[in-house]
Length: 360
Image 1 (cartoon, one colour):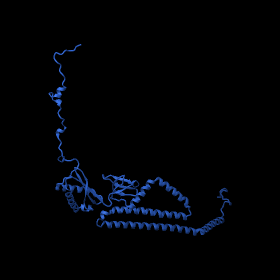
Image 2 (tube, helix red, strand yellow; image 1 turned 30 degrees about the vertical axis):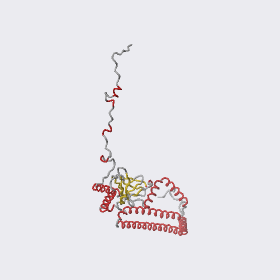
Image 3 (spheres, rainbow, N blue to C red; image 1 turned 135 degrees about the vertical axis):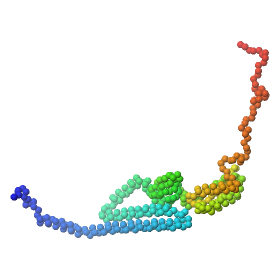
Image 4 (cartoon, rainbow, N blue to C red; image 1 turned 120 degrees about the vertical axis):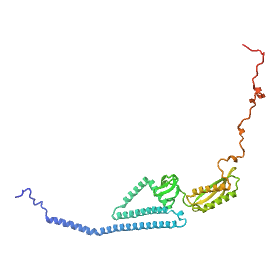
C-alpha cells in the first residue's frame, strides 16, 4: 500500500549522520580539553578541602578525648580524697562530678565550635567565595542576637564563671539574695535551690549579684546563757567545760565539732542578769544542731549544779519590794464625816424662827 505524499519525510528534514557525529565529536573534544586543562586545579582543590576536613575532624577528636581524660582524672582525684580521713567532709564527690562534667561540656562545645567554624571558613575561602560580606553579615546578626538575647547571654556567662570559680556546688547551702536554700542542681543558665520549707527555687544565674555560701570552710555555733548576777563565773566555766568534754567524746558530735567549746566571757551585765557567751567551731551546716545540743546539755548541767538560768520577766520571789495592796486605795476624806468641822462649815445655814419674810 503506497504512503500518502504528505506523510513521507522530506529530504531536507532528514538529519545528516555525518554532521551529528561531527558535532558529538566536537563536544567530547571540548569537554576532554576542558577537563584536561582544569583537572589539576580541581584535584588540588578537592585534596585541599579534604585535608582541611580531615585535620579539623582529627583535631576535634583529639581535643575532646583530652578533655574527657582530664575530667576523668579530676573525678578520680575527688574519689581518692573522699576515701581519706575527713575527705567526705571536705569534698563532695557528686558536686565535683557535676562541676567537672559541666566544665567539660562547655569546653568541648567551645572547642568544636571554634574548630569546625574555622574549617568551614577555610573551605569557603578555598572555593573562592568572598568571606568579607559573609563575615560582616555574621557580625551584624551576632550584634542583633546579642541585644535581643542579652539576658540569656548574661545568664550563660555567669553560670560558666560560677562553675569555673567553684562558687557553690550541689549540696551547698547558699544565700543568693533573691532566694536561699540547698543547691539541688547547677546549670549554665539556672540554679535550682530547695528552700527550708521544701519549695524549689529556680534562680537565673544572671540575677545573682551576691552569694553567701554557708557550706564552705567551717561554721560557728554560738550559745548565750543568761544567769543571775550573783552566780559564780568560775563555777559556770567549770560546768560548761564539763559539758563540752562530754559532748566532744560522743558520736556524732565528735565529728561535727571541729574545735573545742570555749567560754568567751561575759557578753552583757545588767542589774538583774548577766549573759555568758559560749562558742564552738563546727562542720559547715551543722552549727544549728550543735547549738541545740549545747543548750540542752547546759540546761541539764546547770539544773544539777543549782545554777539558775533566767530570762524575760523577773520571777515573783526575785522582786525586791513587795507591792502594797493599800497603795491603790485613796485616803479617806474629811467631808465623809458629817460631824467634822469641814462638813459643818460646808452645810447650808438653816433659817431662823420668827424672822420677817419678804413677800411681794
